[in-house]
Image 1 (cartoon, rainbow, N blue to C red):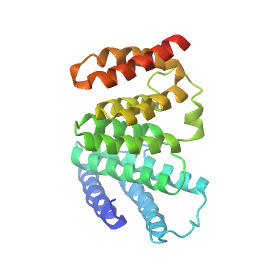
Image 2: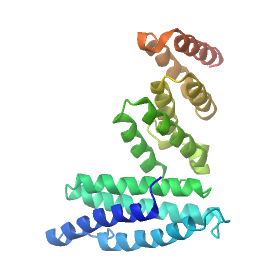
Image 3: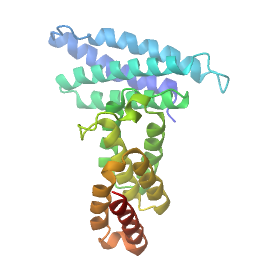
Length: 239
């Protein structure tokens, strides 16, 4: 796990570069927060971050609601700073700031808060998954996704707006199942498929129909093909 000191170093490097570029290019910001304002807000988050990390297992003095609010604000400020980096074509700094946002999500999870800025974290996880075929890395991502699903806000979990197929809750659960499949670990696949069944039952028939087609590929082997056929049969029958 990256230490608070390492995270601060990464943040300082990336944010300083963005701030200098912003000032040198004399960018207009309209009603948007400036990089300087965003950096100040994120530095306040780091003060709380370090305070809690230094407790070394003692009970947190901050309740879950406050953890959720503080984490959400930090993630949102980091993504706004990412947007500034992207406008100035600073892709390396943008990637570094996204890693800090990802670390903020980990912080929320560790302190039993809920993740409310879910779309941002889902996009970061999807990018990480798309960049690797290493099964160990995919397995690690599987466990992170599992934690994010558990700690997503109640608003996202209630998933009331079914009209948007790209809503973050749906994409998170789909990506969780896809990453599990890519690990080719049967136990992880069962975990993810059962989670998908609980959270998005209406999408399961189509998902497992496509999964059954994919399992025809020799790389998956007969056990996984048989398992996928069983899930397809279950959901095609029930729905």
